[in-house]
Length: 79
Ligand SMILES: [Zn+2]
Figure 1 (cartoon, protein in one colour):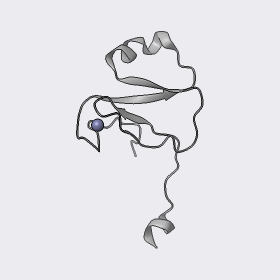
Figure 2: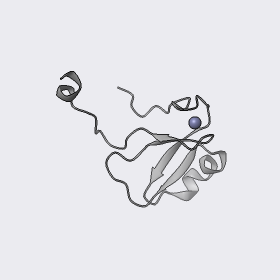
Figure 3: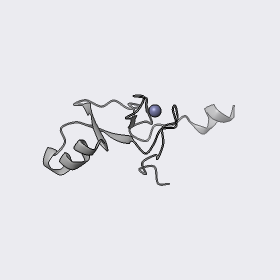
Figure 4: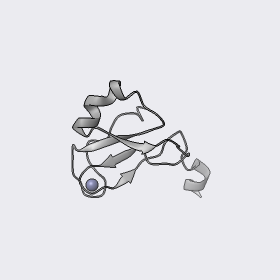
């Protein structure tokens, strides 16, 4: 599973590749300076809760994905 691979397009508007990774917490600004300027990274705030979105569309503002490993259980899906 390569869950960390960035999506190449937005599931809502289909826009791409302007999809940014949402970073939470206090990032190392020097390390992500270029990515921030290029729009590959957006800041999500200093707190992250399970289920917060992981990706952001630069075109329509849609945010999706989920931080962490939370996924609906197989039982819930199958029932
Ligand atoms: Zn979009």
